[in-house]
Image (tube, rainbow, N blue to C red; front, top):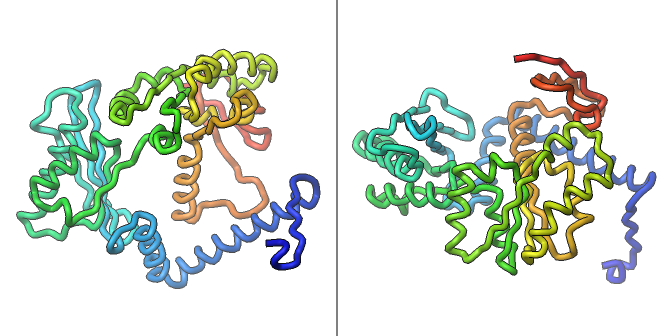
Length: 331
């Protein structure tokens, strides 16, 4: 492009010019967000149309999803299974339309069967009462929950009428990236022992993907305490990462949002060709979208005031940041 336009492009990597470039980018983002906020205030209809159209494009829908219904199922240690349905009309939550379901036909911790039941109950009733069906259904769960929901839609003969998507766990993108069919996961013991992780890894067996798990013992404490040296931290990380590297992984999933703070250290240890999938990225994007939606995003240079409540020992200033004021709460 430089030769075609007869121009010289300079991309600063550090120093004052890099700071100036970062400032310009930040100002452009602030300007865009302010314009969108003004649009929401001055012309809410246009703002709503923009969001609906963007969702239509992103999800490749045939029409705008101005009526969305989301489902999740839960239980208490395998008993008292329930499900919830939340409804959004024109991008706004309609709490009067929320519904809670007590699972009746499924016993034990069976999320798949519970999802199949609640989807059938919800839409069989809407069909009987001739209530308008949603333009999009969102299932909180992986392939198993999604397949169960689809099964009910097919029974009701409305599968082709309503688009349906599932919210997949962070491991899913690794399936499309891996070429060696070996994926490493560094996560907490609780995550690796969770039912959702078990269901996800079972789903991946059909792809002939090998999942190499590693518990990051004490990594969360190390991050929060912030008192360990880089040399000591690298020694611990190598202890966790080398067995997975030896298994020929080409994707490493960071299965805990804390581990984002170790990403640079992990990059130094991993050999070239291994991609890192950081689960904090979609979490951050979701939080930002919620803040923008509620007009609560701080667009100014001044620091916001944050109250942090926790139990246990005092968190290190290195982890939380010296600009935050801490309030201790014992409970």
